[in-house]
Image (cartoon, rainbow, N blue to C red; front, side, top):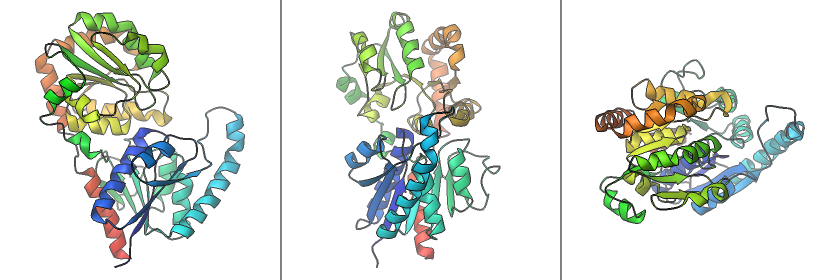
Length: 364
């Protein structure tokens, strides 16, 4: 049997990278002798995260269009042509059986070239509202794996499969880890634990909110694990004290989820999928600065099923304190949110996506 080869592309943020790594791990476990190559954007975080996960990566000279006139935008046509040319060379040399895109700048030129070279492509759309790149690529893609219902108005119904978002396996498994988590983070058993997640790069507005509300939170007998993001650590590390842990990045997500009683989080697609699986009560604060207001739509899809609370950034000063206090003092409400969000989880997403990739290989 010929050795299978796969190219994956996803990057820019953890939300695009970790699903791609989860898919690669599942492919590797099914086809141990397969060759897997990643393609990313040269100066983005995938260039570190992918090699850390044990895979080779090649970088393209590509970036997104800014929303205003900038030098970056003037360079865009050159970067795009260069990336298409490079993608063609990579594909020609590597000869993949299937090319898989999980979003991010680099997946555009790569999948576009794979389509023109008649190589099967799979798109994994994480959001409840697809971005421009995936809408364009979907016309020629063989399979489109989606995480939300009702995307027929963007994608062809025949190609679309509802799988959910791939989530790292270690996150799913938090059962029975609470004791280990309490020791690992040196937590007080008699206090409720609030976990604050601003996404892999951090979230300025959430950090400002926690700084402002910190004394109030502590007065409610709450301890805080505050992931502020690498860009903000210098600004906020002075709050590292008894009952408050400020960190740039959390390595042991399984343990931090096991420890948390309530979570305040951005609503990026993979964070939402993780939070459904771990089933904790969540207050979503979507980022208003992402394309097509993805995050609000992701969070709203959960809120519509009574699985979470949604606060817009514009409501924080007025409403956060009251909303948080009434949630932390109401175990019944916490339990109800927890049960409802769990019903929306799709823990077998990665396996189902790889099933689709396998069908494409078998067709050849």
